[in-house]
Length: 203
Length: 203
Image 1 (cartoon, one colour):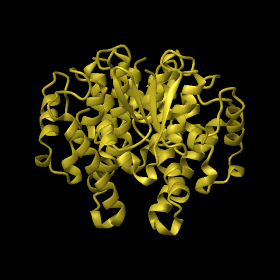
Image 2 (cartoon, each protein chain N blue to C red):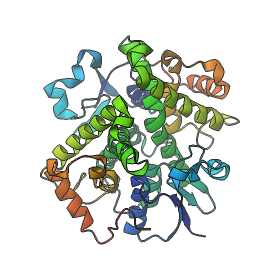
Image 3 (cartoon, rainbow over the protein chains, first blue to last red):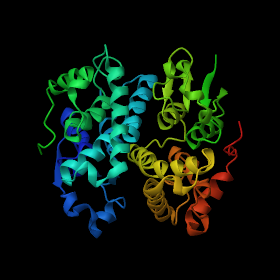
Image 4 (cartoon, rainbow over the protein chains, first blue to last red):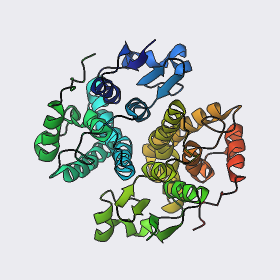
């Protein structure tokens, strides 16, 4: 019995889990879910995850874990992707919380509306304006903090980099321009050069 | 030199930190910030926390930590508030991620609009409707999961309970009715009976 990941390939939240599994060389079984067609809203799926969202990791002999950051922290425990120093570990979680509260609700939501639902900004009115600005604010913090450093916490790649990379590297699909963010662009190139990097849509 | 917590007493996010500090009996210095009057937007504060938000914990000899869940995980490391079992620890983070993504943006935002800014639902139009519903969805998941159990993860109180209690126990200030949530109400009473419980506005 191996780990099972319920996922939707365009999802940045799912991509975080896939990247961590690849970085750690952990075998797993991927179950692709077409969330736009309602695959995560069936009674069978809701019994595993009442929130009706992907990604979901099922651990053999234990059960399901929802929420991308809970999943990647579980997978990476004891690995070099989590800093050994408690203060640096706190900064890693600070970035991951910031991603879920600011960057994801902005960048990921707008990208989902435009790319997966194939709608236009006008379909969402002031909700679009609010969400786009929220993403822009998060990208501005990220750009400033990445100036003059290679990775977000300490001098090695951590879960914080993977968690923020997932939606940031496809922010152009939400209408942001990479030309406005040189430090972010250099950091994206740095992560893409890592040996375990794989594109978001690759199973 | 002791830990310093920059905080705003009505904040549920700050309250999570104060409750954990009390539960663990850790001494700290409280610096109260009137965020409604702009105290967290001064150049001095933004130099410590570019996000301009409270709570912020300053660790002597190391530096600041932002984001309530990063702060409480740092404080509680190695304590009984974090499950020793890796799978239970993942479920603890699952709840905490869910709080930041669903419950807090709903319940806390509506409460802030009504109570701290003293506005009415009509001032926010469809943004109010969206946020209120988001909180209601999160409370529905919490109510269902609390049925028949004392605490969210395992059989002891953990950071997950503290993190979700913070805004849930004042959800009436955002217009939700506790009578609709009997399992949540019983869990709130259980947490309030713990020896380290203190009200949200108590410094």
